[in-house]
Image (cartoon, rainbow, N blue to C red):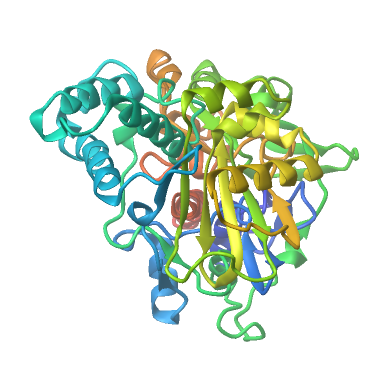
Length: 478
């Protein structure tokens, strides 16, 4: 049996599915990739003295994490040389919040998320309303009598933005309280860097190109891949043979027995009504509408040499009310949601700023020159008394503006709860009348518990490849 299989998308899920199928002897394979490169939301590029990751950056955890399992024997990981708690919390007037007070506030927030999980699982509201309620209660205890409420509020606003960047939500009032717990954290180090190679290392491992790029086992995935192929329609119920037909924007057409669709949830949301013929079943449409995806962007600044001292890990930005009102009147008011600038591992001269949500999408529509200028305004405003030089290079991400992604990663929102849907519904294949999968779905958004991660994307790709391998193994024994 030599079924024709199309994989849409050469990101982590697509490459995981394709390499698994090739290893199992399925070579009648075509990968249709809308970009001019492989990787999807893994995008490692040369920058400054090394590489940077425009998309996925850290391996999050070790236990039950397939990325860690793939790389752990190959000496590709380093532990992050900083932790989030070590960052300076700096006010917009240049004042630094004393370490003891900042650690106290950080501990309060983490304790809410760590020790109230049972209560949160039964909560019928947003993550934001839950945290706010608990945080106010903590501030009212004698232990926090020395924390003034203005500082506490400014800290909470910072942490809100920080948490949005983890979830990819516009606001933690959009994030489902119980849905927040659907994500499973892998035990172990959550900020494992890829040393000086970037996240593309995991793709090289999947393709057996690492540590030896020219090994006899290496899979030349490019030989199977057609680049710059934007899929416009997937006809999945074409006639008695149940052959799928995929049409691209350049009017090329590819027929297949099975299609594995790894498009991002953002693309599915934008195009599902025209993308599938016949239209999707109600449960599938409900999943696409109910699951959410947001925007998280990075702002990389390379300097000629570090202007910061050894051991400094970066700064988190806290706004006082007067300064906030002033910048909200400016043309680049999106800067309010840049919540910090941090040092980058294996890149001694770089700071990386982070922004998410609606203001990240506004930033994406602003020119490179203006964004760079605004980053410098922020650094000089918050680092009073420090001579901050002009950067030599600047690079920012635009994950929402790219029509092949329309966002960064998925999360569970209040809409997910309202529509009572799940990743399981998104992952269900579109099958023929006799139960043969015709169109399958993979990608981080289809994973029940590891959504928003590369390890979730890879597992989903393997899941769909194994679905086909199992199908043909059963057929062979009939």
